[in-house]
Length: 239
Image (cartoon, rainbow, N blue to C red; front, top):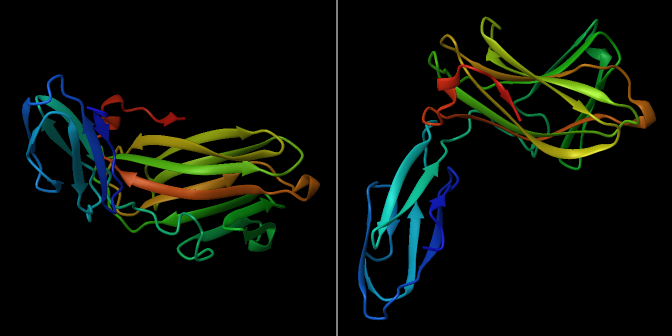
């Protein structure tokens, strides 16, 4: 097989595999163990192609399936619908909230070319999203996001995954060198108690906009992955 793993998006997708046979007249069969994985054919002879289609996953849970082709296996993992919305800030700050101390005016923010940019002038500045989605105790939650730093000095940013009331939370802190372009980071954790409203928060750890720069944030996605194995370690991973 040309591939043994596939990770279609929650929206659904199709992929074409190439099967290389030793003999041109060798027959083969293909089968899927999941109703959401469709095949364009189940029989063939010799080398050829097989198109696999994954239907949209409308739930929050990720799901797994396999396709067996001539005794070989393709493992398919499809994430569920993200808990978060507007992670690319395509509609401005819709779905996002901002908070600063000692006053809201101590946070300066904007959406520039589809990227959320902000800095703080007071003691605290945070941009956050309450997803409104419940997560059971022990539920693995994974966040991916792009962060950068367009100022002329090193900055730190802390990311929290937590219940809305902060009764249960996990923290990752990243250091961003001066002038750091947007780069993708991942945070993996799990709830130690049931969450009624999964929330992600981004805290500016430093003040100032040296050189006219900002903290930069884009492509935020929070997913619930009960089959990811993240809960087994009971540790938060910052990658």
